[in-house]
Amino acid sequence: MKKTITTIIAFMVLQTSMFGWHESFTTDATPDASGDIVSDLNWSWWGWGGIEVTNGELVLTVPDPGTDPFDLNTCWVQIDQSIDANAEITPGDFEIWIKMKISTDGTPDGDDQFHAAIAIDPDFLSNLNVYTSAVVPAANMVGGYYFATDEFSSGTSAAVTYESWFWEKIVASGDTVSVWTFADGDSPSDDAQHVFTTEGVTNAAPTFIIVGAFNDDSSSVHISDVYYNEAPALGIGDNVTIASGYELNQNYPNPFNPVTHISYTIPTSGQVKLTIYNVLGEKVSTLVNDVITPGTHTATWNAENMPSGVYFYRLDAGSFSQTNKLLLIK
Image (cartoon, rainbow, N blue to C red; front, side, top):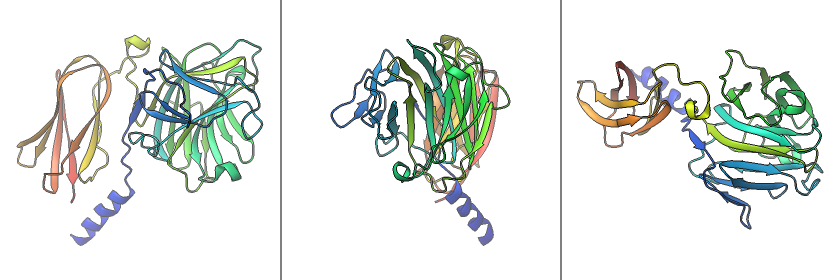
């Protein structure tokens, strides 16, 4: 029994909460004097390049080229829980979806790029120890970039092109990062377009930075959605593939104390019920009982007033029903 409890506690320590968030930039915003940008979530602008949230898009530009600390034409914006309490970042174990478009009024150039900094050394401004997932529309390129050595590993993707909306999906498992890109209206392939490692960063900071890099002031990056540890509901309104079926995912963290999150996917609108039961089959909580739109959703259970033990959660949606087990340890 002692060995079992020790194993469960060790699992709890290692488990990441992975509470997801979504920024849709529905609130127009410009940076204040301190660089804060308050849209649906709070972001922090680094002070070079140009940035605004307008018409449902975060727009990155360089109205004054060559003003960043590296003598490059870039614009940086950052988010984490020190900036917005809801923006949990989980280095080495995450799934990010970004919907974007890169535009230019000038000549296509390989210096027009988008970077998502996903493995960041706390001292990266001095040691340049940071990895990004990068896309380059002039070359239809998707890849990984290591700032410390200026190394770019890459694959190709026809979706990465100027003036077209596309998605970038980035998944990290330890120091292995897999990247997909696909046109808005399509869905990701089974295999990633590029896989790279981030072994140079051994203690990544829990922060997320997105960067627009440009040849000159004729280009811009437009971002309409950022999902972090939460999958987009790719529905008809976006002209993309609808969720193909029902799915009830394992809660996270598990074991937990006292809060856990349960995500589920439904392919069509309808009445959805998500219920918690104890081992006697008695209902102890109803998390969802409403008409829900298609896509992936997350519900949270706070079991602060419940005793330790095994519980079950059941999803009922249309003719679909599934029950999973979860473990509360206090």
